Length: 211
Image (cartoon, rainbow, N blue to C red; front, side, top):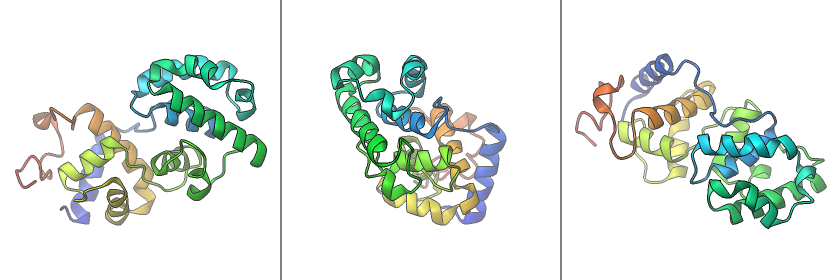
């Protein structure tokens, strides 16, 4: 596993490569980000953004969803996959937010995770991007890249998050998440990583054969 100096250097290189790294889901409010992140499960951000471009024109606050049935919302989000579960979660969360929080998202991980469809990763995405709080959201890209190149060496998502929090300065948690996501999408791909094109291969344990 890399030491902290190596981790810092890797993140500096990634920041040079992706200077504008940020969440690639389109949103204008914390609630919209919650909806978009729920929709992004097993779906690309590109597809989600196409769906929400139309959805958010009419439905961008919790109360806007209260008149919809699960099947009605499901038809609007069908192309994101798993639309029945996503529809149910979004509508249940919208009702809770409207009835208990005045249509405002809570700003703690614990409260966010009580909302249907909002797991730890989604809560961290919201905290990091919508509320600008220090958090690392470990999705499939962050899990794969951080373990593959050797920033951490963990067997599950939760342990990976905790190890990343140890390895990376807290002020860089949110940026690091976005950097690792972009690197995973563009270079350190799941099946065929573009190792020869990778600017961090000097530090990468996978490339150097020790993973």
